[in-house]
Image (tube, rainbow, N blue to C red; front, side):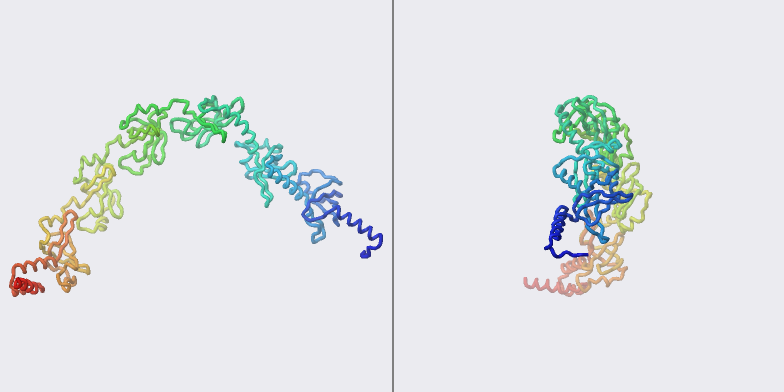
Amino acid sequence: MEIYKDLSSTANQQFEKLLNSQLSKNKIEEGKIIEGKVTKITNKYIFLFIPGLKSEPVIDVNEIKMMGIDEIKEGTKISVLLEKIEDKNGDVIVSAQKAQKIKGWNQLVKCYENNELINGKITQKTKGGVIVEHVETGSLMFCPGSQISDKPIKNIDHLIGVEQKFALIKLDMVRGNSVVSRRQVVSSNKKEDKAKIIENFKVGDIIKDAVVKGYSSFGCFFEVTTPEGTIDTLCHLQEISYSRVNHPDEIFNIGEKHDLKIISIDLEKLQVGCSIKQLSPDPFEHISNYQIGSQYKVKVVKITDYGCFCELEAGLSTLLHSSEISWTKKNISPKKIFNVGDQIDCVITEIDKEKRRVAISHRLTKENPYSKLENEYPVGSDIEGVVNNSNEYALYLKLKDYDIDGFLHSNDLSYTGNPEEELKKFKKGDKLKVRVLEIKKTDQKVRVGLKQTGKDPFDWFKEKRVNDAITVKVISSDNKGLIVKPEGCDMDFLIKKSQIAMSASDARPSRFVGGERIDAAISELNFEKRKLSLSIKLLEEIMNAKAIKEHSSPLSGKNLPFSSLSEQLDDKKKNKDKE
């Protein structure tokens, strides 16, 4: 190879000039789109000539076919993206498909920025929507199923391959994805027509022969035809009928014709609200025919978890709350008591004309079992009951023939036994004779007691008074004091450690082993609270005071079994001498 270093010769200067002029025409840079001329076509490859490259780039035939180009000839010019001027094998790498995508993307960006519509045609269906091809550049875009039309379309075969307008709604610069909408174009075209139609309507107008187009859980859609065109309107569920309607399909069929009354017009949203029920008289105007406190027959039209909707007459609805179904059953399920279509007796409890609300009660048609119980078994009476339930602190009894459960607390089972242990003695189905302790009609509660039917051992103290001395038998002793039982009484009581003796050295529970008979004084007696307190210390003080009063001689006091008595007698004599 000859290297030209000497540029003084005329031939070398001409060659340099020719080379520079050629390179200036073709600026070859990687990442740019350039045009190439087809020089040769084989079964697999297409060869291009691009001035300025040392070798001919090659394009796969399948790539051209994927671009939608069916036929290509020698001499045809193709735009390609120059990816690499030279790879590791020394070949030039180009891509016609990428060049097409970049050109198309730039055009889409321009249309998106200028808010311009683009021409496209649906090429195929895909998951969640369709693929749209940009007519000018061949770029592929995605149109979601919700953006195909402003109304549901079951079959879109008639739209495939048809050139039409689309609106660009999203461009992802990073991923190079674009999303279009046909719905926006259709809606914008209809919007102008819709506004012209609505201008001719006013609130109160009657629309004749509106066609049922569809319905949902919140209302029914009608198609209204006018000389200016057609428009869809909604009749809300509450405006279909004065009677309770669960779903529009209970009343309407697709294609039926009905008259509508316009009740609202929204010029901004271009929406028209209609009513069917307002075309007929309001049945609530007949509410004056009904009186609070009177009993009427009502028809169950709907059942919910919280009550039943009923009709006094066609269209005049009222609510029967679950709390007004039964006197005795709480949290009752209306579905277990009534069925839709049942005719039941109810009493009107409330009429609110402003809120157009009527409340009724089914339980008021029956006698209040709590009032009946109070009349037949007033507080203090004994009644039979059967245990039907229990918990950790009480029993529940079904009282005789009444549908009422009486509450029997464990503390009311026995006067002497442990409440928890007493509760374990009873089981479901046991029959008991109990006493009515309390009846609360408003709260629907009845409290009963078992121990009240027997003799109260506390009555043993009716003839006793505070400071009276009684003889008791020591049952046991512990650090708290002595457990004793008065002779002739079935109840146990505690003598506290501090009440065993006047002297702290003598106030030791361990002095007693059980079985001893001792005397103690009553320090507290309360029949309402059934509370009794005993004290040996108090008895000592009472006896001590009595001895001091009756015996003035110091010697006489020394014969008494109280260690401090002599000293107290001495103090009394000294006080007399001073006087």
